[in-house]
Image 1 (tube, rainbow, N blue to C red):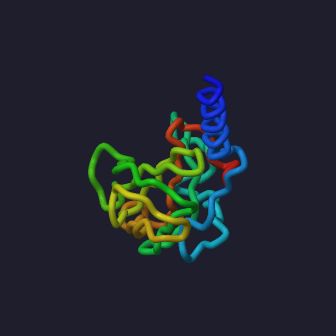
Image 2: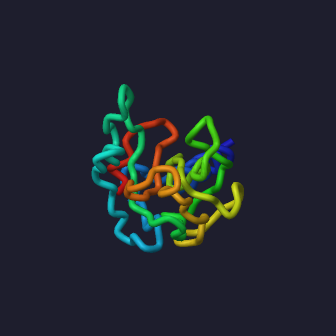
Image 3: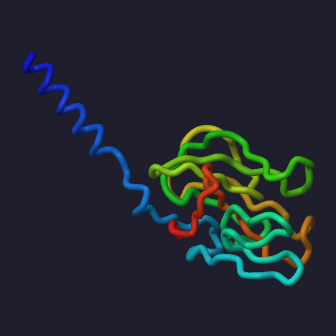
Length: 158
């Protein structure tokens, strides 16, 4: 019985030590030509890229990180690819994205064409490429939209 209790505590200790404190997580580079993850500011025609920005009668539920059309999008830390996520109900040239998890976080990247939708990637490995945002929103600052799965504010991770 004592051995069982000792093994249970040992297993619990190993499990707890493997958990990541998500509050301390910081995203690494998302777009190869924007290593500092500069955030999109405001465009006269399309609004602002910060979390909570007004979009008519709704709120922007993500954070926009500048990324040139066609740029390589990379894993900000070790991630699991959890399938496709599409931002729009109607198809257009930028209606693609991916669900990811890692470092205790669940998040989506929109306007990205992933090389694949499942598997794992190490920090800095290619996720895919930025889609042609200028084709859909001419004049906007092209960007990857980062949205937490629970729709909370991702800003603290940048």
